[in-house]
Image 1 (spheres, rainbow, N blue to C red):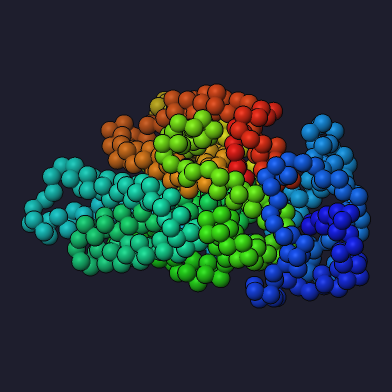
Image 2 (image 1 turned 180 degrees about the horizontal axis):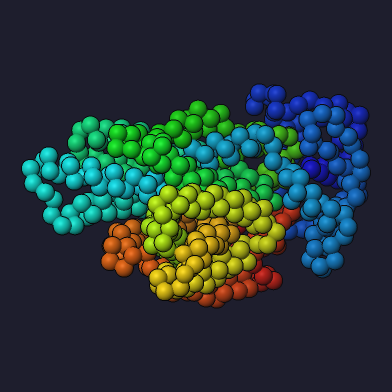
Length: 592
């Protein structure tokens, strides 16, 4: 729904209902972007002051323009003004009209235009697929890669490799992916500011082409160094994607869809992990001759992005706030929203632009010493650490070994691994729906708490499997339940939460720090998981980490501000720092 506010002083200038009906009959999506410039700029000589955004307007008449369908539009009086709805929500006596409006926004996905869907698909599929695919692709062909390393060593040195040499080289091959991701995360702020969100995503595909060539040709060249180097380049790509893509998705999506759109990144990650497991089967690419093609397949998502993302605009916030191009930002927002009625969003971005111009650039020193930035940064780091230290890596990388240790046959263990990946995808879809209803904090707490309990159950089942018949099947249920709890919140929320906690000025730097922490926590766990799997089997599950994550959530997020519940339907900038709020995530200046 788009609302046209008609003040008394401008009512005489407003078009008649008949004129508005005629103009609305034109499909905005069929017009070139340069022909979609709004026709109300003559009434807006200068952007409003920031203080004016906190004053409630007295509106005598409000009309509602229905632009959801591309067919005949109708004009009818609105039943409630936005100011009245906000007042009702603040008093916890939301009117019937306000409840209908919220329900309409949530369930009919108002604002999810075909252009926005196209932009989301272009950015998420081309970026998150790299992240997830290369995370799970090493699981199925592990024995094949180890055989290749051993054969290459014998051909090069004409002797058998020493004990543990092959495992050591393979652990480097696995862990170097995280080193590249960590470096990519650190580069996020520079790339996002220098080349833009969209531009950075497109430029990032260079490393994918290098990785695909190196890994695809490694077997023919008899060089496991090429395999390791290619793995580093694809890690660099995934680290940058993990910062740039959620940032782009956050900035192009409407506020009431921001949590759902942000979850799409993790959804694509889960889909790509499942795809890597399927392609790694012996009936597909998991053979001695075809496994290099399995790693070279990483080029496919990049080709998709290069074919689709150039058709989409850059983030309107980046265009206006970082480049200062007002008209271009309005054109980009018009393209994404499918309507010329984008004045409210433009006013918010202009107000943020004016506020940012009055303060100095956010630096690392200020991020660490300014409490209004330090607390949300601490929350961002905490949720990133809780994701990596939860034990999900053990479930993904060694799921087949866990099922084999539980007493299953190799064929059944492989089927159980694929089933686990499918459950991960389905539960992420459920999380996409729940994130705006239950809230970020609730889903994150439920997920971490459930994972901590299930790891205890799983460890007991694996330890007693030989003495108690039937526990092998309980182990399968426990592992799948572990993945369900992860997909509920800890898997998806950290990626888009950083963008919600920070405004445009601090968002790139905060994202860069948080993503680098995520990959840094992942790096030492890869070789350690390999070593622990050799020594103690798949009993290595971090019980303490899940409990610690829950306690940190309760401490840091208690009384904080929940974006999913408090700001739904209210796109006004937050009050100045220090103004107390009722609950949810912390009150941050310029948060969107």
